[in-house]
Length: 114
Length: 111
Image (cartoon, rainbow over all chains, first blue to last red; front, side):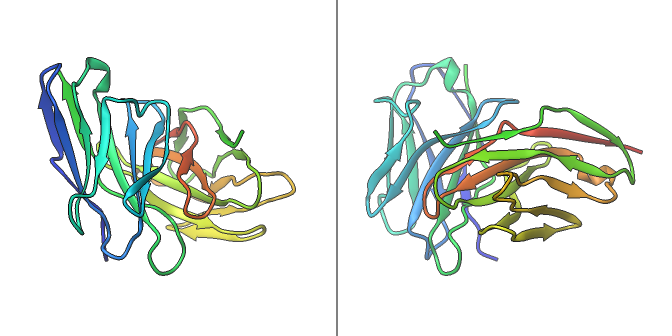
């Protein structure tokens, strides 16, 4: 069964450093998303991406964040200068292939900022 | 605005007990409704879904019915197992739009 894959599974970075989280969405999907989940809390929407541009973003997605689809398969989330409060699980999702438009989630990247 | 409200956890049940986790939604139009499950240390898995009023989603013994009149999508299972211990998220989506999650309900099943 097709799946969304995320790398790395765990990333530790120093405060102020840039990080790039990578995702490979399901190949025939058209809509891509990033969410985050601070430990023990709810899953929060960050951004959605369609047709090579951001279609919606939350107030969490400030200028420190950016997304890119650099080629036909990868979808990346960049955090320019990480803060302690960016420590969370980040989930990538995709939707919009054949059939119903449910979102399929990756296993997540646990980001720890120290 | 649109939102999902689900019951506070944690919920602790004995094995083979009946489970209900309440979920109500506020949304314009006709959203699709979902239950996602997150097992300890893992990602989000779609458990079941319903795309229109009166639809019943079911999977792994879990069921939920899309009730437009009460704007609810309660999750039920007749006999829970220890392996069902997880966090359950009610969620909705307006087609290709983002998924909006509830706060999650932690279920702990004890032998």
